[in-house]
Length: 309
Image 1: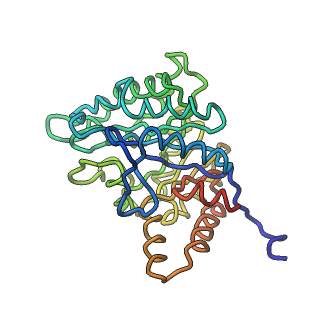
Image 2: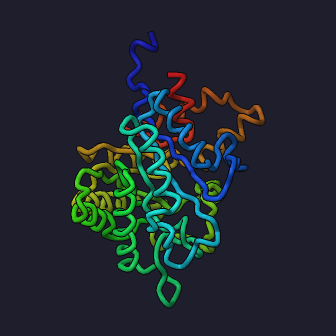
Image 3: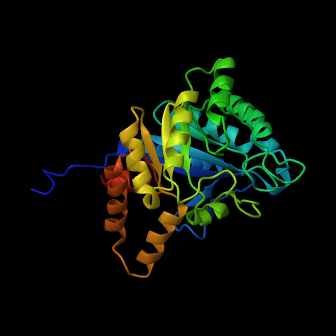
């Protein structure tokens, strides 16, 4: 009876798998703070993509991890056509074609030696407009590599409009934009910093949103939609279900939520200690995100959960 009258159901097509691919390794590198998640080699990333397709997962969000010596102040590895992320996009596209929506993180933080999401000015502050020029270049090289969807995640003002223009002007009108509309400055990103080998010193409070603010996210939403976003995202997910619900009620475009590394790590750590039932907790958390209004959920459990649905 409960199954018959359930108001919300998870489906494999709701799920997107975030995946990390690291340059210069010959075997996957486990991420200590995220048990079960690895930095992939190019070969193991291909296999993970095939496994996701076979499970019915809808998409894969790719993050590149360059070698440390290739990081610089401008994040030039992020716009190198032969940079690790662009190579990974080509690999996955060659392996699964259009059977999986291939998404890419469009941000500089993985590629800068200072770890920020943008170019810094002479005073060490993120220069919004100089950063947008780099994002336009990133959009083009990622689209040239064969990505279906770009995810500008740096929270620069005007980023969606600049990326849309760059895609359109280079013949990539069909590449869609998943806007990181409400991306909060969160303590739950901690394990992700290890996952992407972040060089960040300090924090990103000057460009990510204040966890205390909801109306601010609605202003960001209006701007992203006006600039041409095809889909919008709330990140993190569980601490911001109210924001997710408000945005989902306000728009007629698809809404995504990103169940981030800290959310994943908490469940895995508690389950490892025997404090919670791991499988039930995973499904409950994902169902809560779905109930709040997410059409799509980025989760590191995507393939595993899809296999069991």
